[in-house]
Image (cartoon, rainbow, N blue to C red):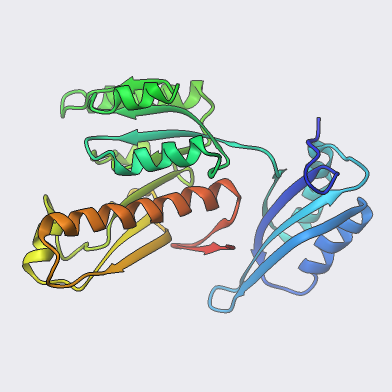
Length: 290
């Protein structure tokens, strides 16, 4: 059944990408008129470098058409323009699986935003290779899955993770400071539906304690990058970045604390924008309709 929202009519979100050529906007507008729909918001972008066109439209349907029928009807238009598109109900919530190791600031931040309704998602579970945050997760009435990882058990552990993803019908996996390198097979399985967060010092300060390394070098700007997971470690399409200015007065520990804040902010925005269908892939980059 369609969900009636603030407009009083069922609302939907259409996102699409295709070759940038005349008639795309007209075709979308005509489709909406023919189905007695009205546009609530519309954003578009034509990339002159790649020749690709991107669009996001939120609309209300006055005739109360079902999602499936709208998808089937729009598929005929998409074929003529060789479009990639997603059409979903505006109130449809992403089923999200969070993953964490021993740094819990991003996990705690996402759980809080989820609890107060700031993120339109359903957190269906938390996976960790340690038990540090088991009590925190269970206090939020969310299933906790402890999956230890060693070099000998890595393949088995990743299969356990995929089983959870499949059984829970997970739409998005969020690596909220999960400190394990995913295999190429797992990255491919989660392509387009896994988001990672890390500090933005790479490739300058690698390995452990990057903020301490940055402090020793006297950096004046720290940051964090949220991106989609790919087989290229920490090099997937960037969704959001956040920065903060620092100076000589901050100790290494205070630099770490400031880094935690920017990591939380960047990751929360990336999850929100993904959940609201605001991100479209453009090769190795993203188009983000804020």
